[in-house]
Image 1 (cartoon, rainbow, N blue to C red):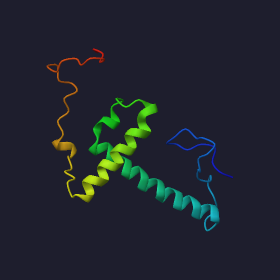
Image 2 (spheres, rainbow, N blue to C red):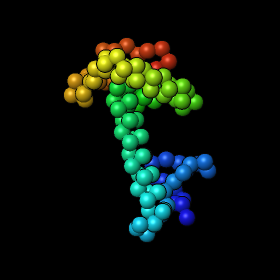
Image 3 (cartoon, one colour):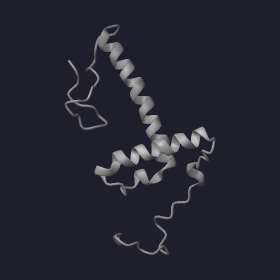
Image 4 (cartoon, helix red, strand yellow):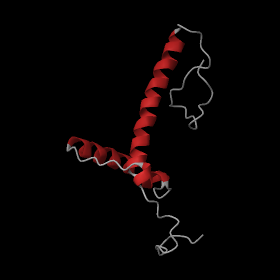
Length: 112
């Protein structure tokens, strides 16, 4: 029997989720191992995109637009890779100006 919930996401009826504590060397155990490996790869890819396109992390993309924006950043990322133009910005090189008091408040932004 499949697990009732997954720790990372709200479970929807259409989702495939791992089995709860299956016995080793069973089809359910092998499924869980494959599921875990696949999910890990997907999470790493999402991490790369969130590092490259930091606006994905800050709530500026409305949930209903996330699918469109995600497709755009996947395509842009792949184009950059194909052209070998992917300049990575490491966390130590990224200057976060969010807390800069000299930046003007933009239209539609809230003051804190």
